[in-house]
Length: 158
Image 1 (tube, rainbow, N blue to C red):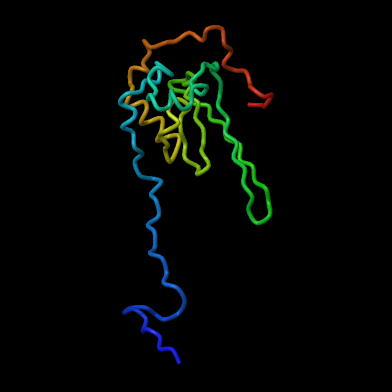
Image 2: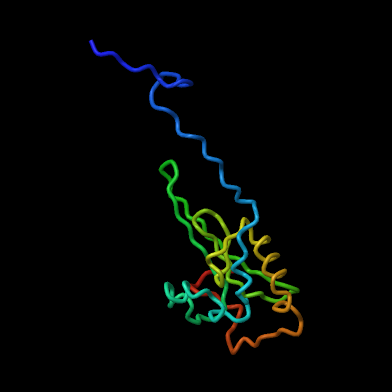
């Protein structure tokens, strides 16, 4: 008969050792906004980090001002769920053209900085407005260059 080793101290002797409990991520914590130091919401693609310019060149191409819609699909308990989110952000009654979207984890990001996510659209707008107060001042007006802000891409209703 083969002699077995005793289980390690503290082991219950039942099955495999459990993995250490992972601390859940705090999605309500402050996002890493250090990237915003080199970004300007009014300068667009020119202010993106070089790695974004190299890895996603078509992402930076001009595409006109419009509301951004995020579509997330998942299956749960045999049901297909589709979540369609469209943000329309106004600052002082004027469209902010921030192109907010939601990633697969439910974090909010702006089209301009997809590499920084926030727990909510409110958190995102506060952070961007605090970082760039001049971009939202009365003296900073940008013409729409003939682009109708109230249109809908893809035939959806607003």
